[in-house]
Structure formats: structure tokens, C-alpha cells
Length: 247
Image 1 (spheres, rainbow, N blue to C red):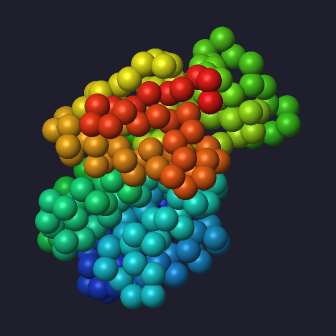
Image 2 (image 1 turned 60 degrees about the vertical axis):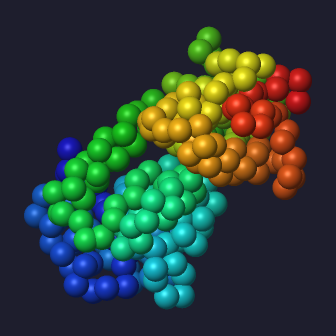
């Protein structure tokens, strides 16, 4: 599965970049490297990338800022994004995952662990895009598998969303969140259940709430709601979330 995949590695430590580059190239990947977020964005603008590995603490533009810039661009929103960081506290890992990153690898790490994450995330991305179709005027919205809730239309097969007929670009976590609620319109879905669906993670209600808060907030923004406005993504304090079909 390696042939043709391009990995972008971003880190301000040259020796780490070199070891990642050598290890992945030995396994058949094409590797691009950048020393900070600004350089990474320039590379992304110049050529397609299949997965991003990014350090957190970098000059000019850190890993969190790079992540936000990547997810804000509709052309890059589905690229798997993995943080690499020496910040190994549970709170740091939770924060990275709460942003919506696909994984968080703490330094120092074993190359085999890095390779396993790369392989797994690329495989998942391939599954998500297998049935995707180009967004052209000839594309049709009608499908017996579409989920229609109020002004929202969700296509689980193509991983596409429309609001009031307009396409909405979502990250994988945001899409999983919305799709799960769309299958249960009006029902309150418990935090732990929803966290399992979006992050494939079994955790406490408190931790699930922290992870889902960031996803819900960014999802509302993508759907066009103002800051502080719930819109159709209704939060039931301490219990879970529901999709309001009337909003």
C-alpha cells in the first residue's frame, strides 16, 4: 500500500526529520520535510500530500497553528494529521486529540510505532475516500442512503454533508459526530457513546465531554452558526448531545 503515498514531516529538529525521512523512505513512502509550519504550508500549496506528521513546539508557526490552518482549507481537510511532541502529559495528549488530530505520538518514540500509525491512518483515509465523488455541477444529491434532518443532508457513503443545499467540508471527527447524531435525530446521545463513535475511544464521561466539546464547537462553526450559538447541535449539559431537526 506504500507506493504513491507522500508524507509531510514537520519538525524544527533536523536530526529527527532525517530519521523520519530515512525510516519512511526505506518502507517505500515519499517524504517531504519542513522545519516549521510556514514552510509546511508552502509545500502543501505546491503539491499533494497524503498524511502530515507535525511537531508541536516550533518557531514561527507551531503545530497547533499548522493544524488549524490545514483544517481551515477545504482542499486539505481530509488529510490525516498526527502530532509528534515531547509534551507527554495526559493534558497535552488530550488537548491535541480534542483539536481533532488523528493521533498524538509522544517523543521519544520508536520508529515501528510511527510506521504503524502512518499505515493505519493512511488505510483509514483510503476507506473514507473510497466512495467520494468530485464536487461538480453534475453531481447529484439524491440517494436512498442520505440522512435528511431539517436543512441538513448527510451522505454516509460519500462522506459528504450539505446544509440548505450548500456543501459543507468537515474533518473526519466532525463528520463522524454529525453522522452519528443524524442517525438518531432528536435523541440525546451519551458522551461516552458518542466519543466511541467519533474517536474510537472508551473513556470517562468527563474526558469524553472534553474531547467532544472541541469537535462540537468546530462543527457548529463549519455549519455557519455564530460563536456561542448551539444551532442544531444541542448540548445537554453533563449528559450528551442531540441533533435538533427543527433548527
